[in-house]
Image 1 (cartoon, helix red, strand yellow):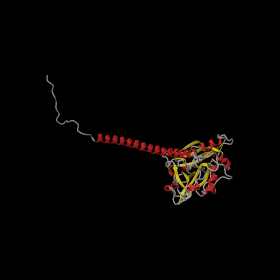
Image 2 (cartoon, rainbow, N blue to C red):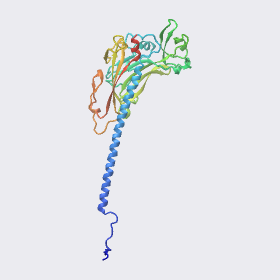
Image 3 (cartoon, rainbow, N blue to C red):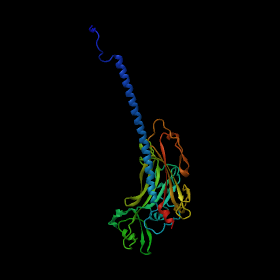
Image 4 (spheres, rainbow, N blue to C red):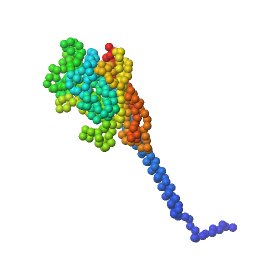
Length: 360
């Protein structure tokens, strides 16, 4: 018997969604969108925190690397036969006179241990807005690169910069010994008669080298406002490692300040002295109370650099760590500053030039 198909004209297949189904679909979609938005926000927040930490670490590494490279050249005076003698007293780091600069050759490294509210008088002339409780490091040397005043390897006297302090080391024609001409500011007229030392061939004038004084310290801010840190850096001063450099202004020796790295919150230095004359460190200390002779014995330096993020961390972060800052002891952030992340860098540096000369 053939199958019979019963048709019901009033019944048709469903077309579209019912209101309830539509509302359920919208709700599920909104949940998915909210989940994706939350994930993106979390990823963005994590990325921002990683960027903050990355900048902090980069600034800290650069600060340490800059000082390490500079310290490895401390006490470099060119071609000399013996180490310069220590002066009778600790030299003034901000003095630009020829007599002081020559005497200071015997003090290749010098430090000031945790100056508080008021800097020593000798530093106030050239160090501004120092952060109390952080060390000040001074080093002296000459520039090994003399190509800017030479033509085909020979000194061109007209290329010496008037007012720039130069030191010439080489063979003294009168004694046939290697020594130096006192650090002197070039004047453009008598330089060839002032700088009389020769190279080993006893004929060619030795190239004068720029006399360099570098003073590292932590400033209370990065960009000063009218010479003050009170309203600097948009109202939130950023502690910054800076360097004071001996240079020239208007034809006269002078000091200028350059920024090295932002976010350097604390800086402490330990000094290693060779007390037996073999070039090997025997004692370590913070340098407090050192005489000029003590500074002349320094053959190693240990840097403790505490870097801080430039912006506060999120998610309720609080830095309650205690950081070992060498002879200075432990350091920790006050409650008002605990929202910043921190990283401690420690680097030991051998002072190759003074250490090597002490062996002989």
